[in-house]
Image (cartoon, rainbow, N blue to C red; front, side):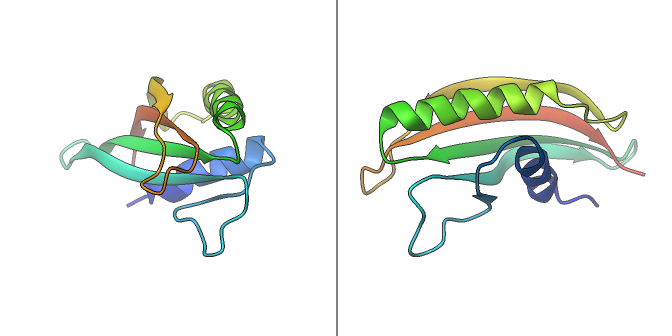
Length: 116
C-alpha cells in the first residue's frame, strides 16, 4: 500500500524549494513543512485510499507561514498527479500556532488514491 505521507512529501519537494518531512527535527530550521495523515479510509474492495492530510507550514513569523501555506496549496493543486489521484482538494487553511507558540499555518487536503 502506498505511503500517503511520502507521496504528499514528494509532491511538495518536487514543486517547491521548502524543506519537507513528517516531523520537525531538533533543532528545527526556521522554515519547513511537515506532513501527516490525520484520517481517511481505505476501500478494500476497490483498493482506493481516501486520506485526509495535514500540511503544516512553519516559519519565523505568522505572515511568512501564511505565504508558505498559499505557495504549497497552489503547488499541490497545480501539479499533474497522474491517473491514480482523483478529487484532490484543499479543504481548509488556518493559523495553527504550536504548543510553544511558534508560528504555523495548516492546510488540510484530501483526495482519492487508486492502488494497483
